[in-house]
Image 1 (cartoon, rainbow, N blue to C red):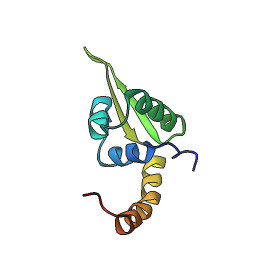
Image 2: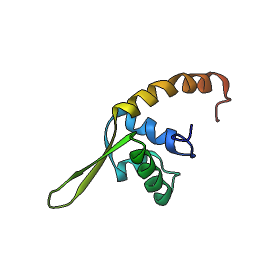
Image 3: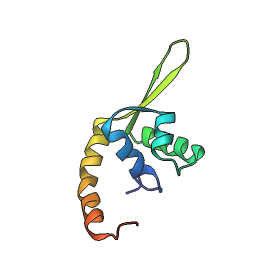
Length: 93
């Protein structure tokens, strides 16, 4: 539970489940998270072996984030919880 503690970690996992993303893409996908918190959560998820950070050297350095195999497995484990939430929590109007 400590690995996914934090308001935005599960949302980050969801955003990375579809494809690898650059930091700016993640920020746009999760507009309510501050840059500081997003950076902090990405570092923690990377340290826990859930997220992989790839640096591409070019004229401009490019960094992409993706799920590791552990991250994919964690997302799969969290899927039933997401299904339950969609079925039981009131929808926003």
